[in-house]
View (tube, rainbow, N blue to C red):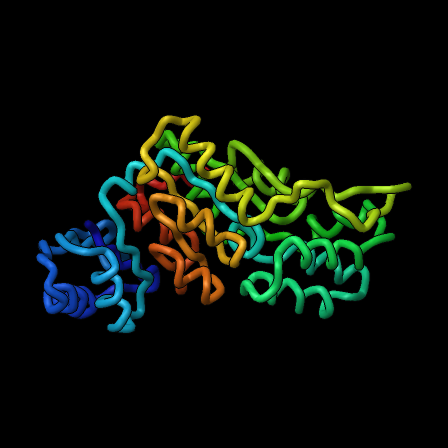
Length: 292
């Protein structure tokens, strides 16, 4: 097993020593630290239980992101990711609603759905219905004006692809956002919901079946089988409750600036840094990131 500490704004030797001591006090056999990038990311190899190590390290409250993983997780052959608030900085449906003048109303429902307080399918149908009559052209306008790629997304996906991983963007959002976003970041495949249109306007409905939590998990498991890889070689990342089933099914499930339920379900959580933290968690030094 490996515990990795990442602090892109600086990681001190005192933090590393405290982490080693915490692991040892939890009854784990800890090897000497191995720096991935000096002062930024460090591995603490150990023998023992992943959950015990994570609990011991989280109790320290160190100013760093923490990932506890199996060595096999670092041979990533499948990377599957949520889009809204994970690969991009916004929730697209909330931004679309702003053009209709109802952002606050829809954003409140989105927040509850992402926290797992509402049924995802019902919440999606209700929000899309409120957008009925919005001009189709507003979707592209919204994408160009509001959608920003999350920091670290491009190097994360492109580095994993360069190392042989299949990359899939699977979103409970919409195809007109997911396809261009996925292509810009570098994903091999983009999967999302199809919005119905009528006379150049949103019809207020989406095609069935929708991309929900079950679909996300199914895409992960289907890709593992199709690629013929071990489950440990798969990584899933997301922020909302609808990402939990795929996060739990992946070899390494990662919560990214996530809702509490999602964070609790994940093997690792990125709370402080950007998506580049995951590259460090996989033992990849910054000099080896693909940035173009």
